[in-house]
Image (cartoon, rainbow over all chains, first blue to last red; front, side):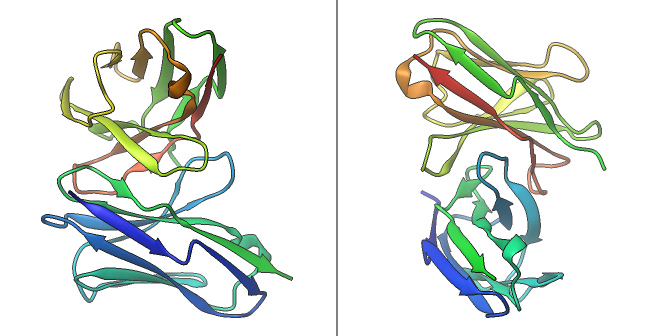
Length: 108
Length: 113
């Protein structure tokens, strides 16, 4: 059974304080790993897709990396508007299996 | 920028009633999906639809659920006889291919009383 575990569950940062979110996964035949951002009461908003170990993607203050067992979402110099829940999902036997997410709060 | 749309945004129904949730996927996408998220829990896969038929479904997607693409643009999820535990956010998603990125709609919040 495909599984995704995200840590930490919640993270509180000062504006400008860089950090990383972790996504550990077990999947039979990884087809892709996806990062989404979810604001309260809204649908997941696509951020990145990673397909193979060693791959990296970057967008503004966010950078996603992938190994054979985990992925990291690095946030550099975050701003209050980066506050959201960040979801990791894998595509394997099931189209998408999601983790519980990391709830990020960035304080000005 | 093309996006997935869903209607209604909120739906309140009585237990045992039928509900239909509607979605308009991104126009050049071929794979369509429904997911649900119970308050405070993970997003869970329900069903995928390709070439006018169900391609994959989860254990959650039992006989009370059905999906349909009634025309060239809409994609619907029907719950035949709602239960209290069906209360959740229901998300529609679409993608160009099974392995490619899925883009999600804003969701329908369903409350069963």
